[in-house]
Length: 139
Image 1 (cartoon, one colour):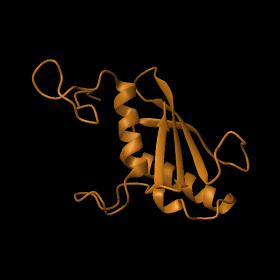
Image 2 (cartoon, rainbow, N blue to C red):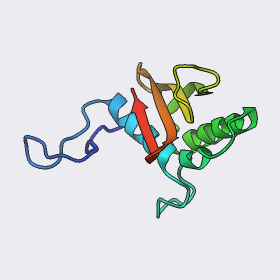
Image 3 (cartoon, rainbow, N blue to C red):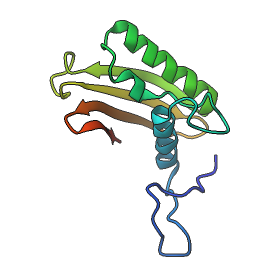
């Protein structure tokens, strides 16, 4: 896998052009985050791309919804990011973990990058606050 890609948000580098991604972990996190937050139909050349996590925000989070989220994440990774080996997907809300704010879903994806010795975790918090939809990502 090539790591020649611009860093987002876009900014100009010291040399000509945009700043590039520095390492494979950073690039994979970007692609995984993009996959999670993109809604199906949003990507013009691939209408089936994306998990569309925002659509789950107004669901009552129960075991059925968690299973649906986990299955959708797994399916999309297998199709679009087949270089990842998912070890575990953890989906928690404020009832299960008091450190998670109310009205927030925490999704943590533990994965290995095939062909490397790299492992990582992407943790994504999605919540609906007074100011509207807010998402934060921790690495």
